[in-house]
Image (cartoon, rainbow, N blue to C red; front, side):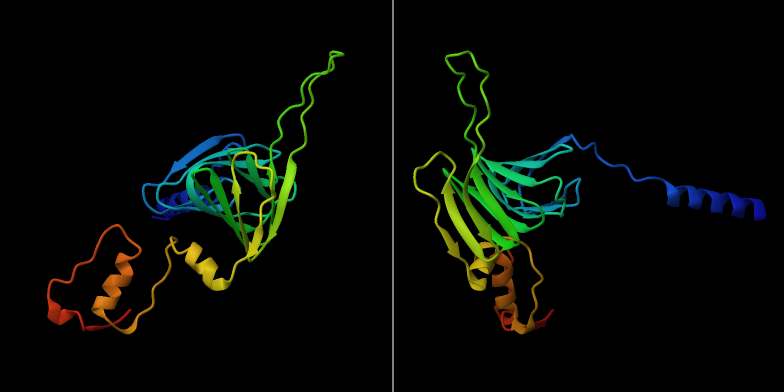
Length: 222
């Protein structure tokens, strides 16, 4: 028995000290959401995907880049001043270090809502053509379009535009409305069952149906 106990203890210690498996910094990941989905990225940042969203994560040692292919996503970015976090949609970059923001790609427009910290929005200018003297083409620095702090939002075309984006303040009620697609804890204090079902149905693809009308007024505490 002592030998078996010692062996078991050895296994436990081995398991406890086993190093965690980490994804390579340069690995490319893709996430698609048929319904609400939350993912933790290799750097510890968290992304909430609305239904229909599609993102491609391309991390490197120097930068954390996410391509928003379609849909809407909320990012809670882990702070790392040496590796900026960039979300790209079209030729527009939303850049942050450690903050929280929501991006929604709808048609030709990108909506950005910042709930924590500051983000910089820029547009990729591409490369400068080679000169007549045979000089090597150079990369033109991205043009900063706007700086958005917490509690503000803007809508910007993903294709080049002449006018600068308009940054507007967003009230707490508006922020809650814009982020209403994310799951939350519902609190009912003596609420009729019909109200509980209606609240659930506003947020879910699966519908609740009350089959007995006498139960509609049943008070629920949950």
